[in-house]
Image 1 (cartoon, each protein chain N blue to C red):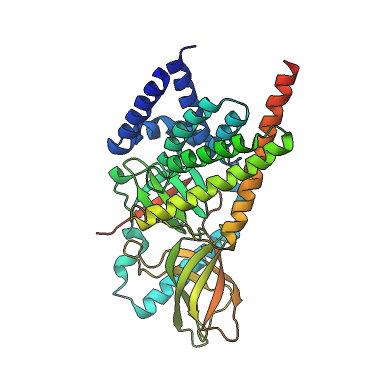
Image 2 (cartoon, each protein chain N blue to C red):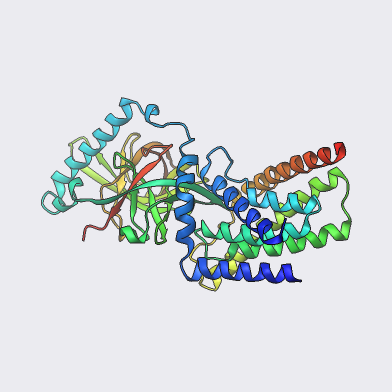
Length: 247
Length: 165
């Protein structure tokens, strides 16, 4: 009986200190070096990238800037890359539960992170968005997660060399692939077209590179076509940047 | 060894397991080390220690979760109570029986997570609701097989060690 009482008191104090008095930070601080060490056991991703991937992203960025200049030259000046404020963060781990997939990063509310902010890799490709921010850590939902929805645009160029914008919603499937849905069937999309964020989300600006169209699925009686997107963010990522709101 | 020291030892062991589960990329996503530890302790005859592991493990799983606090703790407590009832009802002693019980316990744990996640969602404690589609069912089967296999291997190991002792 005494043991049960001791244990009950122990659990009660633990719960109170962790979830009501924000004592979770103690555990996060203790576990951070361990988590960093364990996460580093992953294969180094630096060598897995070839120059071709870099050129693809560079090319996409150039196409995007060209499109901007054509249509929204003055209006979009404030959206250019240099104006992003960001917070660098280390990935501490990943968790998966019943279709939910989340990445744990070592920066939180005290660093200015709030839910909804975009998370990018070292070359500015979208990795996901922040779901929840604690004081010293945050949880990021990757794009491949089934519950991730990001509005996106495809910029393509027609024969007259004029840019055309196609909008849709990016959604992950079973943590393996990413699809762009709700793209009207009459919209012309080609393989290799670039996909960028549309900026309709409150905390994600327009123009962050997402990926490239690799497959187009059109069904005769459907209203929309589905596009398979190849993400350009690094696969085995360790460090990410959280883009803070411009204001 | 006095009880509080053992308790602190278990506390740190579970904390380490949760950190390994979250941060070590070698482990498959669907493998729950805390759940494996709890069921292994129970099947090996350490029922009271399994109860302690349920509470402490639940707290740490809640700590690194996007779900509201309590979901994993409540799921583990309810699952373990049901599993204990089933084990006493059927008096499982054979090796095959242990495997079937492990499979059942994994299923019960997942059903409890589903139940509490929906409960929290409908009570507006959480914005996350699990989507029941073909991927969920596939994931459920994989979770059951993987965790039951791990528990089975652990139990076999314990049985062999006891035999030689």
